[in-house]
Length: 92
Image (cartoon, rainbow, N blue to C red; front, side):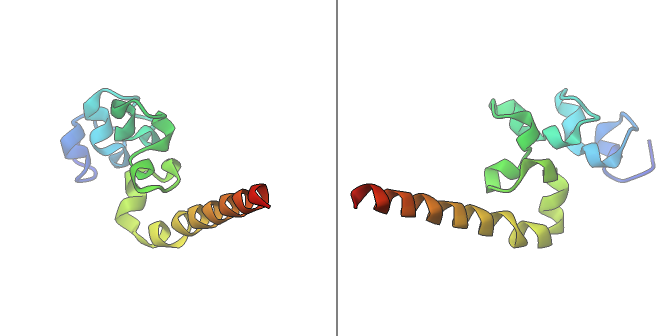
């Protein structure tokens, strides 16, 4: 222990990026699994799935913030618009 502050919570002494994941008994090396595994969702989605981001980003992305605002929110919105168009076609 003692490399990165986050490792302190783990106590495992692997990589700081793993964060609390290791503590929960998930696959520590796959930090992208995130907390969502506990909720019965696809583990790869990670915590970001709750926020609607690409789960692979994991908790680190939440801290960065820039990527969170940039990509996936806009993409999701666009996808929703596409679905709406399909609905209109159906009515026509």
